[in-house]
Length: 207
Image (cartoon, rainbow, N blue to C red; front, side):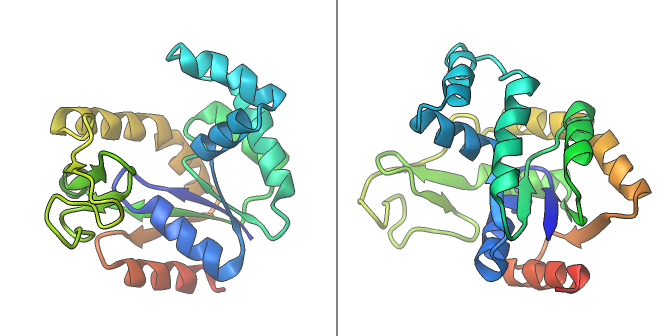
């Protein structure tokens, strides 16, 4: 099965994608992970992408498309695309080259997303993720893994988060409209427990 997961930051896309991957064997694919993998392996596409990333520039779509295409073609049991497509050009590329079975939209209000994202924390040393709402460390402010200091990310402030959410809405509006017209969009309430969200996804996918 080939699935796309859409949702604002804080909606739990990555977490739900990993649960689905572990349960069904569909490959969880994000462009960020693909870039890192290709850069680490020093592939031709990875080195090209690195030049843009190092300069703080967006990687041109033609390179993004090639990296994504390679990964999707290797996903033998199907894939879960997380964070792609974000815009119409990416959408055109995707539907031209791949069959999409379902698109899951994790519905979450902007206020709830901001609340969750401002609660995110990370270990200063080992980079383990925490959240003071539902994924706390055993000792306040101390990492469970390495006992490093747990801090808030610099970009997890209300102003920066609001800008990222606004950008998401602007970019993905037409993508959501397209899949709605194709009757492929599934709405999921993301303001519930991880387990409840997962079971609702499985039920609506009929798998």
